[in-house]
Image 1 (cartoon, rainbow, N blue to C red):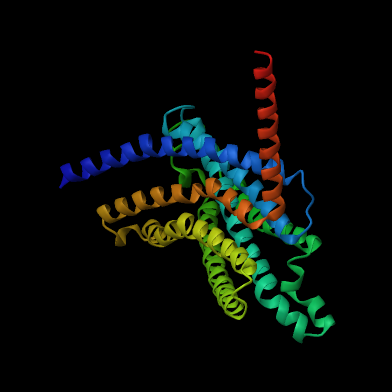
Image 2: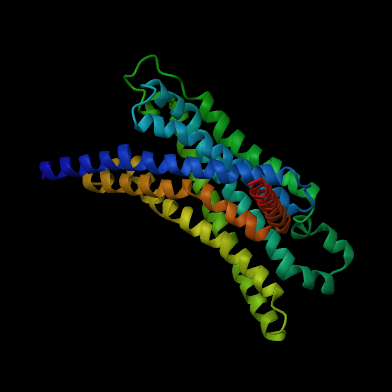
Length: 338
């Protein structure tokens, strides 16, 4: 049994110290490239709708997540010594998780905005009084000003609940004795607040999941009814399909597996005596593997930007076509000189 446990431990060390750092490095390079292009395009176009505001904030959250990958790769490959673990515990890990949940919340806001645009817009226009429509929360989700206020509240919520208290209640170690154990760097209040942040963040995820399921189930029903009424007009059907599949596929691939594993993993950390060593070890492996899937959303989110935002799509295609024209002109000029 001890030999089997040591073999499993060795295999897990290979997974965490060899495989995962390589995957994170590739994800960092690809994610930085894609989101760098997305940021370059997005911040050259005006925020003409609430959807664009939410998508721009998702780009910022993804760039912040990507910035933390290099620290994780350096730590797992032995670069930077013990001090880099202290930096991760106090700063980059907090930034990683906060940025991830900010992105999740913006997915929820995008889903609500799409729900109003596709499902509720027509019924609001037809049945409600103008005054009631103006005070509707869903109605204001498409407003640029209101979207900016929600974006500020979203960032502030995660900053003041998770980032600021965690940084304040986590100290930097004087040596490498406890540098790799983040919980030992926290004060007694910091340990308790860490549990609060964990339950708070996970609750935000499950709430967002319920919002997505409700919104896109309603959207799918609305699209199906519209498609049956007017089979010759498929534009709404195609646009809604993009909204449904781009958000849902990314959300379920990246975030659902991690949070399904996070629940038993959290219980194993809080009530460790109730779990066998083998079970705790397995949960740790699942947690690290599914956490990488959550990180991979930085490579998939640009698909959402391209499929859901017409301004982004047209700007990107315009840039690409312009570059192709310049390349073809340069080639033609070179050939003419031969």
